[in-house]
Length: 140
Image (cartoon, rainbow, N blue to C red):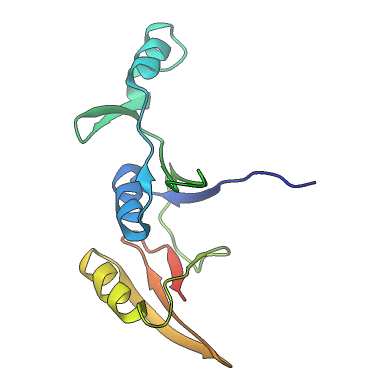
């Protein structure tokens, strides 16, 4: 048996981080259903304070998601009250290839990422990077 899944990343500010990741890996930000959000508030199923405005659109304040444009795979960024304090227990490996790795490192650093270290094991090399909120990922 196989299961579908999404990856969820804790975040202090999920909407800008979803924007950052969508740009970083070429996915799309999942659009909010503003009509649905308004209806949930009007029916008392959600509160006004459960919403916010991001880039001029009404969105849920607690999360934002991005999707792969072809497969539909999803990464959810959810708001949590505490800041990241230790190394991730799970991280993404973004496969860019040896020939593109340095250009991607430069592009992502210019967009707010930070290089943490460079690693190698046998024939494999990677660069461990942190996104603007400190979540670690590897460019392989």
